[in-house]
Amino acid sequence: MIRYFTAGESHGPALSAIVEGLPAGLAVTPEDIDNELARRQQGYGRGGRMKIETDKATVLSGIRFGKTIGSPVSLQIQNRDWKNWTAKMAQFKKPDEEIPAISIPRPGHADLTGMVKYGFEDIRPVIERASARETAARVAACSLARVFLRSAGIQIGSYVSAIGPAGEEQPSPKLAGLLAEGADSLRKAADESCVRMLEKPDEESAVAAIDKAKNDGDTLGGIIELFITGVPMGLGSYAQHDRRLDAELAAALISIQAVKGVEIGTAFQNARKPGSRVHDELYPGGSGGPERKTNRAGGLEGSMSNGSVIHLRAAMKPIATLMSPLHSFDIVSMDAHLSHIERSDTCAVPACSVIAEAVVAPVVANALLRKTGGDHMQEILERLEAYREEIAKRFKQ
Image 1: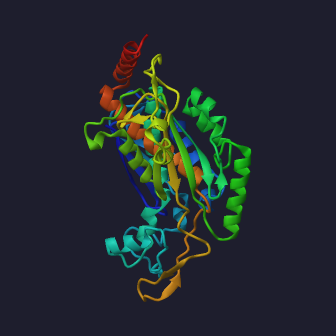
Image 2: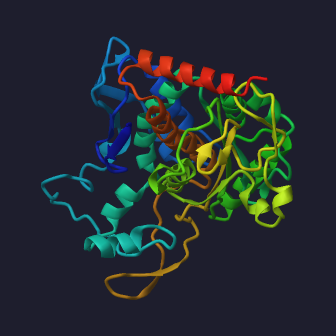
Image 3: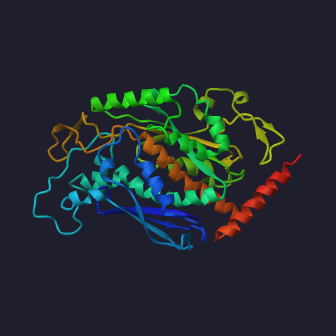
């Protein structure tokens, strides 16, 4: 099974990741990792940090001659801004210069609870690790699982359907055609927009909303639509709670900083309707399994993939650092204060959509590996092809 760990602080020397469990023989290029890192840095509404960092990953182990060798892959991403933080973030010797402690927490952030939990007198250590800068390491790590899935014919794509008050009232008419080509087509179409929206009027409304929020010293959240195509039916399991694919996917998305809600298919609409208008009726004749004329279940039934496109929706709250700060207090003096201001974005929803694509990749990859087994690419792909053929044979008319 694939698992990964990240390490590093937002303003430390570097971020790092270790990815374990990748099968041997997976062809990987530097661009497979760095292109995803570049996508994460894009989007209208990002702050000054993105002008400083140009994220590139250095591979330290686990790949030889362009292919994985079955051992852990270790990655490192340098923080170019580290040179400005060597005193504040010194690992060992405390600098002679005074480093003021931060003692005024930001509402909506990890500051207050993290400070209490770990016994800090300064919020800085919480800020550094709770920061969404950590997701750069996650995107790098998960890009390898994404390459694995793509080699198995499984693609992941997303777009942004809402930013603050701006967004689509109905799904774009382009969506069905893009998904028919595969989720990579959706990803590429969304990347053409500075806010990763599919329709120009929606993009223009979102840009205007971001501009207003920035002028007001405020921030905006939004909604991400995530799609996974090419997933055969039968990944995941109803037999145990920790093998339920829907639960694992939801957990991956909710682990992203500022994501506070996850929906599968049209779940919240479904909750207001009778079952006769919710469940996707079955028809014979599909090559990869029975056909469905609707996909309200979002491609997941009984906690397993059902052969339809997997559709997930994630809600990202507005970023907790506001340039017009909210009311807070000093944890030392207990005096009322406006909250601490830390350099931040006005809106990071487009970046979050890229991160969302990344974090679901290991989940689907592991569900596939549980089904096929195997330690190297050839045997895994042969077993997957045999399974696809078995499904087609079972439902052949």
